[in-house]
Length: 84
Image 1 (tube, one colour):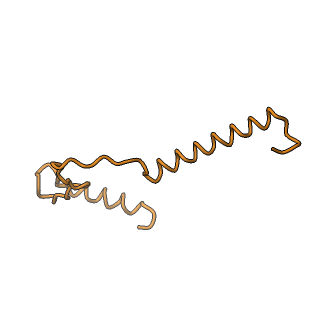
Image 2 (image 1 turned 60 degrees about the horizontal axis):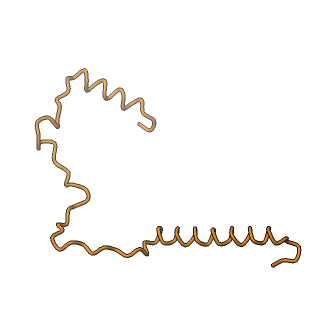
Image 3 (image 1 turned 90 degrees about the vertical axis):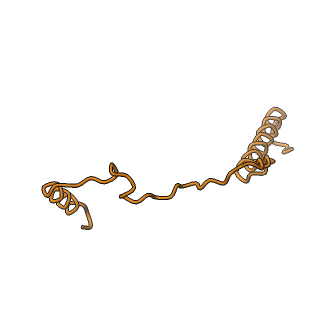
């Protein structure tokens, strides 16, 4: 230890350094996935993460007919947006 540090300060510094090392090891283990992985069950079915996009005609409630006044109001709204 350093001669200018008292024994209690040296012990506290050692404990703090040990805690920092344990924390860094735990963080590294969490971040880089060094935990043992469980094997996937053989019956697991591979599902897509994002479902396929449906077309607008897939269901009648997914499309709405706008009146001419609604179309004009929407066009006016778009014109007020920056960059248009």
